[in-house]
Length: 152
Image (tube, rainbow, N blue to C red):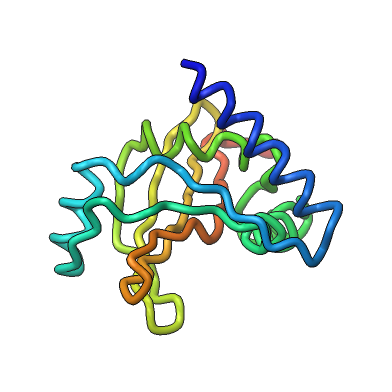
């Protein structure tokens, strides 16, 4: 329990540092990937990720908020804006995902997409498989509303 509490403090401070210092290069390490994740990645791509590090960089925090936090831009993509709280929630997505699927290529690297259903949205979290560095790097996230609105 203490690890979890400290970890959430760390992720909050990493977000603040990333937003307050546009050149910060901090990296937050997560727990190693769980067996289920390693099996899924092995099935999808034939890559053994057991024991690899899983990270979130300040650059990727800035990317998420720059690219996916504007409500108007996101609405045009049929998505809803992410917030700092969504980034803080990344450990919940990784530990309690509803499914994992193959993602799109990110340059020369494969990706996986964690999908987590919440009561009002589906959250997608993308992790890049940096096989040459033996690293799983959390890259971006976005959300889609599950609440249907009707216009009368």
